Length: 602
View 1 (cartoon, rainbow, N blue to C red):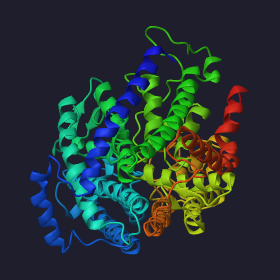
View 2: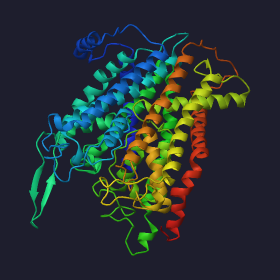
View 3: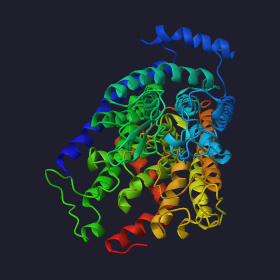
View 4: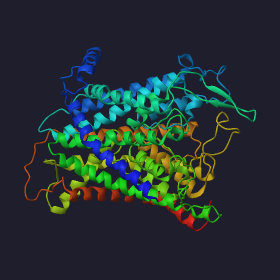
C-alpha cells in the first residue's frame, strides 16, 4: 500500500461526500414535482409523454397498483428486448451482420434463444450479466435499442422504487405512494438523460469511441491481422456507469481503453457509480423532514465501504506468497507498486483497481477495470461479500437505499427488543407485518444465492456441441467441466456467479463457460428472483407504513439519527451476512486463502 494510493481513495470518498447534498436536493425537487433549472427544457416533453400514454400526473396509486405497473413495465420491456436480440439480423445498424448465418463473421457468437432470454432478463433487472462477447455478438441496434434503453429503464425503475418506499415512510396517514409512470418519466427526463448527454461528450473528448463504422482490419508487422471493433461506445458507457448497470459493449469492459482510456475517465466513472446512490440517501433525509436520518444511513454505508476498500487493497498489496516463492519481486518501489498485479491494468495500479472492484460491487454495477478472478482469495472475498450484503453500501441506483431501509426496519426491531417497547422508525410503529416483509426480502436473496449455487455445484448437464468443440461432459464446476478451476476456487466461481446475478450486479469471477442453455436459464431465473421477489415485499412495507400515524417521541424512543443507530445498522448487516453466508464462503475463498499460504493449489 502506498501513500498516493490512499490519497486517491480519500479524494474519492471526499468528492462523493461533496456531491451528496446538492444532488440529493435536486432529486428531491424532481420527484416532488418542483421546478428546477431543467423544467423549461423538459416540461413540455414530459406533458407530451403523459398525454401520449394516457397518464394523469395528479393521480397517485396505492402500493399494489404501483407494484403491478412496475412488473408490467418490466415484463413488456423484457419481451421486446428478447425479440430485438433474436431478430437483430433483420434490423438496421448491423455492419458486421451479426445473427445472419450466411454473412456473419466466422468468429461471431450466435444469439441463441437461451442466450437471448438470459441477456434480456439480465438487462431488465439491472444486472447486465454478459454471457457473450459484446464485440462478437451484438449489432449496434441491439446495443442501443435493446440494451442501452434498458440501462435507462432498469436504473429508473430502481430509483423510483426507493422513492416509493421513502414516501411510505415519510407520509402521514395516506393511502398512496406515488404514480409509477410519473416517477419513471421524471427520473429518466430530468436525472438520467441530461447527465448522460454531458457525460458522453466528456468521454468522447477523453478518447472513448463513438461511431457507426464497421470493424477495422489492421495488419501487423508479423503479417497477421487484427480486428478492431467500433461502435457507439461513449453513449453506452455513460448510462452504464451512472445507472450502475455495468454491461459494456466490449468483453474486457472498463479495462479496455476504448471504454476507459485514461486515469481521469476511470476516476469519473467511479464517481458516477456512487453519485445517485449517495445522493438519494440525502433525498430520504429531506423527505422525512430530518436530514440527520439520511446522514446516519450515509455514515453506515461509508463505514462498510471503508472496511471493504482497506481489506481488498491490503490483501492485493501484500501479493501472492506462491508467486513470491517462485522468485517474482512483489515489493513496491518508485517504478512499481508491487503486490498482486495479475489481472490488473498497470495504468490504473492496485489502488484504483481495488477501489473500482469495491465500489462496483458496493453498487449493483458490475463494471470492472480488473479481473476479480485474479485477486487473492481474501481480496476477491471483498466484492463477493459486498454483493452478499444486498449491495446496501451506497448501492445501485435506488437499490442501495431500499436495501438499507430493509435493514433499518430489522435494526429498530432489534432495538425495540433491547429497550422493551414497540419498535418505531421515523415516528411510526414497526409491527409484525413490516418485520415479516423485511425478513422475506432478506431470505429471498439468501435462498436464491445458496440454492442455485448448491444445485449447480452437483448437477450434471449435457454440453451441446454447438457450444463446445466436443459433446458430453457435465456442468459440475468442481469437476472442471464449466470452469478453469476445481476445488475451492471453482466453488468460489459458482458462488460468485449466483451472488452476482441474484444481487443484480453483473460482475464475475469468470472461469465459468456460462454461455450454455443451463447457465443462461439458471442465471436468468436468479436475476428475476433477486430483483422482483425482493422489491415486492419492500413495496408492501411502503404500503403498510404510509397508512400509519406518527407516534410522538418519548423518553423510551430509540433515536435513529445518531451514531449509535448507524453502528447498530452496521452490526445488523454484518451479523446477518455472516450467519447466512459464512458456511458457503468457508468452502471457497477462506479455504483457498489457507491453501495459498500453505503453498498448495488444486
